[in-house]
Length: 207
Image (cartoon, rainbow, N blue to C red):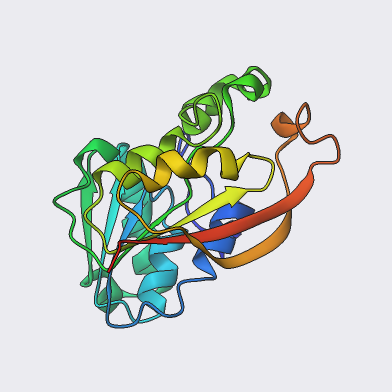
């Protein structure tokens, strides 16, 4: 589906990471979902197709929101569009978006690989910080959702980051899905073969 979606210049094209995340949303029927950093809307489409009661597509780029709207209407029709709202904001403003599930494929390329990212798409991948987890930290610190599902490449040192992530008020995550995926050539200095496991992690709030 991702290859057929309308994607304007500067909008994040659906990636294999996003597709993996989208594949885990089959249980969102009847639930409220936030697609944080919606890009062209692949994750939004997956949640709506699974029967989500409502989806909030969030992005800082109005072009992403427009592409998501167009893709939902084209692929799923007017009824699905009626279960969708848009929020143009950054992740520091996630708190008002109350939801059962927040799904996010955050920027996770560590600062040391950004020199190898093409300049025209650098804005889509800058934000992982030194260890690749700054984007996820921002989401976990500000969302009011009950659970967060996020992609995380095994190239990153999750155990080293986990203590700080859990101190933001979350239980230890469970692996909700995983796959061996090709990584962008920008990862080559950390991953010469460009293939590694990517997990979908689910963080939940303590009971």
